[in-house]
Amino acid sequence: MIIITLQRDKCIGCNYCAEFAPDYFRMSKKDGKSVLLRSAEKRGFYTLKTPVSTAMEPCEKAAKACPVKIISVKEV
Image (tube, rainbow, N blue to C red):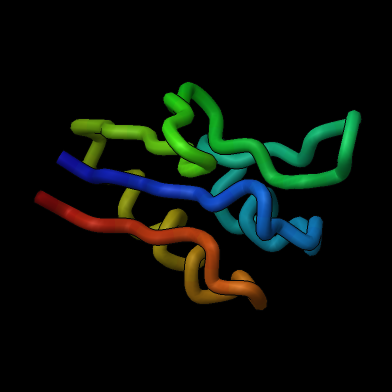
């Protein structure tokens, strides 16, 4: 199981996450911030749990590229 977390409130809209992991991230047309697709929000943290092992590589690239370090990716 892979857990991807996004702190959306701190997003600066750089678009790296959507470029590296387009299957998991999009940029909002309303406010220009990142959206973690199919995620659940709790206290400002958007979390997606997925059994898809191919999610790890692109989401880790997105997390490393993020200039404000608001994306985390864990395998449990």
